[in-house]
Length: 242
Image (cartoon, rainbow, N blue to C red; front, top):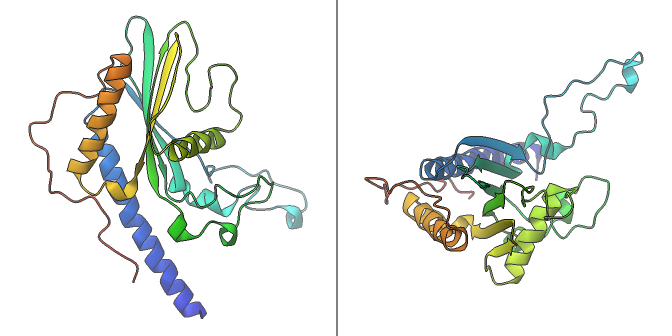
């Protein structure tokens, strides 16, 4: 591939990435309007913020502009969590989150200090893009059970814990992951992004998850049904790579 063709493909890839992310934002925003929550947050999981101060050095030749960053830091939604704090009761706290994983082709790579190279990833056709819907409820006297806490010890690497749970779901024929004890309940469901192409499909996935949450915890995740649902409004990307 010559350089001109390479950058033509790069421009096509960036535009397609925009269309895909725009559709995911629309899905998340639709879900946000359907659930009960008090606060919203977000977290990058495969990358770090690129807005960081790098101290000046006496020898400019030794100053590295990017610091300890890697190229994935410039693609923050490669793996990202949308976090919603639930409505607390008199005795319990809760939260709901959506984790988007755009490409799990990196998960079989061995642990190493160097940044994973795409040439070492699993083949694209054998990789997946998916969402994790997760809900946690815990007694106010105890710490939360969440992706960064297993009920006993704090998790050092949130990303690894998310991948572990996601792979557990996959190995168990996509049955929901449920961890429960007297103090807390943690529920995670994995949904292929290919299965969510409209608001109607997103709503069905959300309702199924909300029903599971209510059956296990009694918590009502959803607000009242919307007066009108745009069942035919597409949220899938309109561009494709030819």
